[in-house]
Length: 285
Image (cartoon, rainbow, N blue to C red):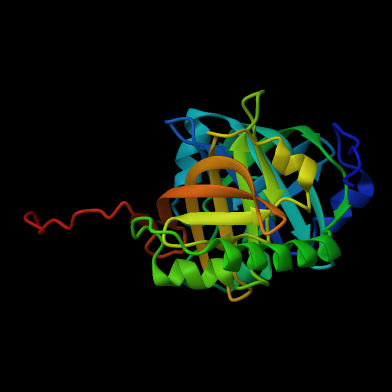
């Protein structure tokens, strides 16, 4: 059973130390102009004090637009030892200079990169976080086995062709990282691991609810959710759809998402994959 997590309003010195390594997973959940959740990989996401996070921009993307329209964000930081911190924060400012700007541009990834560097630093005021949480690998593995069993017993369905072959491969690889986000009652997005998720046909995602159960049960039927998937080779895809609630298949309680939007977040050519965008001939040069 998932225990009630303590809520913190500041990072500890140990937390700040854990965020220092460059190699980690940083996710930022934002809200678009339609009020829908969006998840972006932000590898530079860190904290510079007990009450403030920051991150650097080196490529364009929807999250940078979203936070200027709605400053409420959710975040997840996961270190290489599979510990994670999840919480909520408010965007407060951005700058093109300063201590964090210099720090980011002098790290190994950007200092010797001839093609791009950090050009803007964004700052977030911490609202709350849940403290250090070890990723529940045992529960995730059991939930993944249950999800695959339910997927096999439930059949593939006959939905329209929404999920393309690359997205199928990424979503169905059992060791790829997957995270779900929705907008909470207070207007802040929340991020929850859902690594057990699998495709179930051409337009649906399913996941066993046996791990991070309390978090997943907080998502109500009919809610628009985002689901971010990434491989260890840094292949990524972002899906969005409607959460359809829970059903039991072969004795396994599974949540399901009807997918209606797919986005490629990988530079240099980020863009919507589904619904397909009409190609138009270039007429002005």
